[in-house]
Length: 430
Image (tube, rainbow, N blue to C red):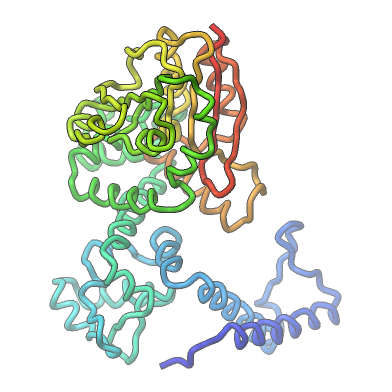
């Protein structure tokens, strides 16, 4: 068993070997490697002892990075970024088959017998994963849990999230190029990488009607279950808490009995959060019939909230509301559909009515720390792959209102401290 490493020990190794490499570069008048200017260090041409120092530096830096990340982040990165076969590990439930309570684990032969897979293939798959701290090999011919794989095996919610990342989102992102080859404009949900891929897997021809990713989820319980689990987990993050919706907007300034319409509002969680704080307002929740049919009846019995079956792609039936609210809706739709959604409101709007969007706003390149931006940019790729949609930068929101109707007055974007979502607001000039 390897000796446990510590921050101090890794830092000392990094410091020692970085000093060795830096001193060699100085003595030989070689450029310092740079990620900005393009200077690179060709380690293959260095003396053996300097190559060894560079390899130790690289390994210790990686291990320190992984140690700081911890098992959960290691799994999240492994599921989409590793040079390993995460899909087979999930598909054949390998984490759940390795004993949780045994340091010696299970032999590859026993695991092959359990799964029906060839032992050679299993060894190839699992040993590649071990290089990313998922599983370990305590002795020749046996596989056991690492901290990361043990977490995977024990946490059913995390297992669903990893399944979504591996078999759904990750696969769709890899298919973006093929989808763009067929549909370069990327402006229809049914032309997304997810839709094109699943149509191909079903043997559909190019001219046959394809399902959107939402429709695919509706008809496939395993996929929809994974997606629902992931969304529930995301909704529990403090950064998307509904308290930011209730506390971050000036609901108190609206006149008594003002009507707030929440489009795509699901079972009314958002308006309940507002209604509990601002009882002088009235609310209507709109969503598709199958969603409205399962909304809790107790909400309308205790709060001034009504439910209406309506698609926000169709003309708005409720006129003269004070606020039309879209929370976490627009990032699921291509630009032209967002413009269409706004246009459907126009006949129902009275002068001074507000359209309030609460959604993510993509920062400019370099606007947030690189590790955070990498994750944001990857999720932007996921939105493209699944829906041909995106997390928009600030300027794109103003453009949506301008394209929809020049009578919209864009009021700007407001961020709320602690919230991952921003308020984007426009007023109807009439």
